[in-house]
Structures are given as structure tokens and as C-alpha cells.
Length: 188
Image (tube, rainbow, N blue to C red; front, side, top):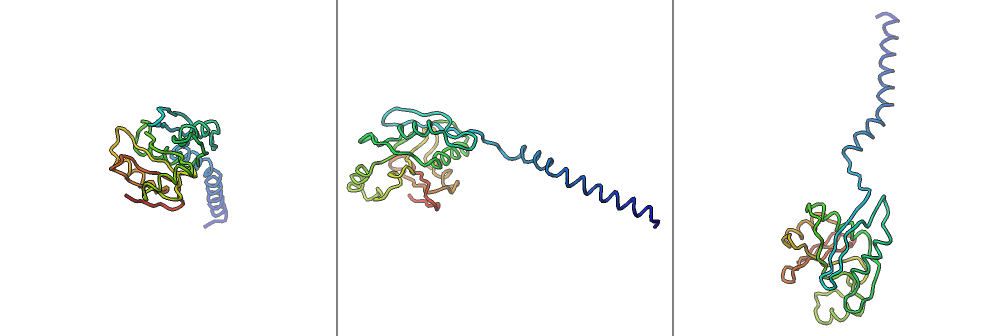
């Protein structure tokens, strides 16, 4: 093999390696932008069955929770027994958004219970031991709901498949409980 052939071959190998390295970030960005969904906004639809109030809209945009939307949601999800409000953990709405996407619906959730004041929770706990003494409803981290045109079992299974917190199935009362506890937990 001649010296000039070896040099030419080495040059071509080095040149093609250089082109591959410099092209990779552009190629990777191009592939990622086509395969990874970009959610610049997240929205949900809720209807409070007790007050008749509704929320349909964007609660998260461009990486941040919309404070005005969260305030409207806190009002919608207030304790119906004494009108007390509490801020909600935005991650709960993220779970609800993911659940609507997984079910392929934009139908509003029918809200049975959102926030519970400590006084309301204590009263309910005295009546039924099924109501947790330290319920996540009191922290704005839980919600009881259903979807009108979705079988309750299907809704429950889809929520459990997300493995995003607690999911309780209450078929006799016709709702599921969803919360954002640290570890996925399921009960009936």
C-alpha cells in the first residue's frame, strides 16, 4: 500500500467521522422534535355536581402552572359545606389531564368532592370510618369524580394504569378517588 493511498484513506475516515459528529446534534434534534410530543399547554374540564359550576381551560402553559386558572379551580373545588377554599397541588390536575388523554376524551369530569376543610372531614369521619382521618382532600391533593359516558371500572383501571398516586374505586357511590400521594396505592 502506498503512502499516498494510506493518507487519502485516513483523511476520508477522519472526514466522515467529523461529519457524523457534527451532524448528530442536528439529526437528534430533528428526530426528537418529531417523536417527542411537545405540550406547550395542558387543559382539563371539570363540572361540580353540587354547585353546577364548570371549568374548561388551560391550567398549565409553557412549563408553568397558570395562577389564575389554579385560583378558579380552587374556587370550583371548594368545600361545599362551608365554602372554604384551599389551593390545590397542580400535579393533581396533571394526573387528570393525563387520564383524559389516555381515555381519548375531552368530556368534563363530574366532581363529587374536591377540598374538605378539617371540620367537614372530622364530621364525615365520625359518620363513616371509610373517610380517612387525615384525608388528602384537606391538603388539596385529592378529588372524587366520574365521567358521565365512561364506565366507572374503565375510568378506575385507566387511572390505576397511570401509577401516579392513590386511586380508590367506589362503585356503590359511583365515583373514583384520585390523589397525588408519593407511592401508587389502590383500593376498593
